Image 1: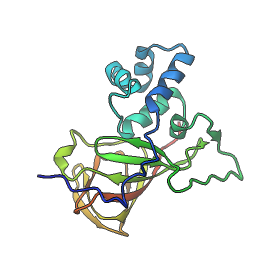
Image 2 (image 1 turned 90 degrees about the vertical axis):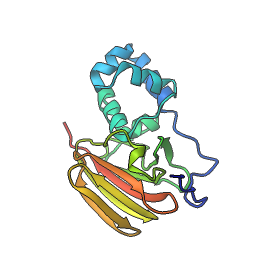
Image 3 (image 1 turned 135 degrees about the vertical axis):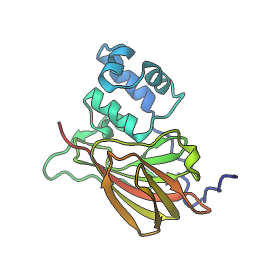
Image 4 (image 1 turned 120 degrees about the vertical axis):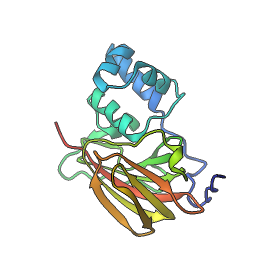
Length: 203
């Protein structure tokens, strides 16, 4: 089946670039004197996965870069902004249109919002769903916590392991246990646009 085209209005701006996640992680790891195997032990990720990610040969899915942040003892936002400051009472963060840190995978483009604040209880993102078939995914994504999803533009099929498919139209939303395996697939002629807010339980 031919892939649906990406609408120019939905695609990330040409002035944006994917966040240098691999370089950032390598710098943090080396500054701590850790070997690849040390980071693998702390994150549960394979040494080969971390090595390829550091060399920008692969992009990690959300559940994996969340595990990476946890293993490093960092907030997800700190992986994208070296100058991120800890959230405090009275803190305010504004992410201007077109200025979000990007993380692109084969099927999704994540736009990390409020990445200049570390230690947040919520992880807000907007994103573009490039995948148009369930077969585009090797496995379901799952991570501890809760997830809120709102479809901004397009049509979306939400696959939840053991729960079937929920079809969403623009303006529809879902709230679910993100520990359930889930996949977002664009169901329209154009890539879908979403707003997602994830909550990760504390230690």
